[in-house]
Length: 492
Image 1 (cartoon, rainbow, N blue to C red):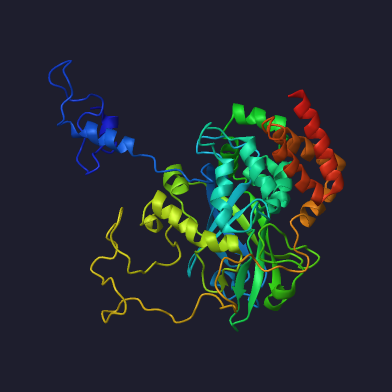
Image 2: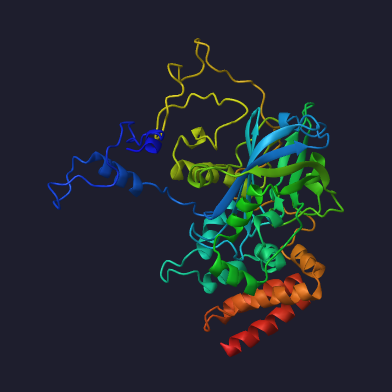
């Protein structure tokens, strides 16, 4: 062994024993078969076989970074959350970006919504805000989510994503028209994770010290400016550098070019919700800024890369059910379903003790529960009792709910969301279309037409239903799309 090697640490087995030879398998004589007693070989192979956990069903492809959130405005009249209590206060964060439909090995530069999952490591526990780069979504009831995702994933027979499935579902789900317009507009393919906005998307509740509560929507506006990719440019980049967005984020932080976002909220007084012109808890709609102007409250900065992608990005877990005092859910039916589904997905993927992993556990306080054992349990509780109440000094409840209770009336049942005066699946999609420049409209129609035209030749009914939704949003929108699809299907 050289002097240089003597200064290096010793390679060991998982149990800590030194490894004598990591280059050669133990065999029965020179050139003979391997021996089962070579535990270093079998330990390495067994671990290698298990190095991957099940990928996320959605949002599998992602990248992340640590950072800080700094409060820049007094919001104490709306919420009692401790990390929002004092101007200038900083809170450590972890932000994971992702695509939605692609698997772990897919490309970054694709037309797809981008996940924007943000963890605040607050002194009252972790607060997770799980949103997207769009302020709306395709559906408004969680019961439809598995069906929707099945249309975006591989068909059970062909093994490919099928235009028939996608447009059949969207055509039969007119509430998707608004989000589809976002998706096929210029912002459907962001140039990087640094050049997109983030949104909480759902409506949440804030409660102040006096017990008053408000409805809130979050906006994260990129300070780098919005930048997008044209479809042909994205196609090229996806083939040449599938890791383009991950690489861009990592290298920018390595250079010290820390991306930032200006954080805004829209605040709705609780009493406005019942008689607002449309359902304020409908995830397929935005709150117009003229009704509830965005208020700037903070700055988000990403300034540290994870050291290990698997440990910190793949094993990171986010749940919209992770609230802190002063913040809570709304009656948004998509949010209500996600409160269960996200945490359950992580219990399946990572394990029942996923919250104990360094990236997931609270950084500014300690989690004190009576949960014990299970896969990957590390014995952290020692001899402490695992029940409550107890007379051995165990943790006790506060008696103060994290958020305000809200009134409910009527009988239980599978109800549609309450209808408001201006509830409509098409108005906001039409408004968005009319905001676009002529060039943006042309690109939107071309992108939509190219995809709709892929529907099977004998399923014109799917095509007609899809186009009709856009016609209901705006007559010009539908006319242009119908013409473009007809010409492409003739050519095909």
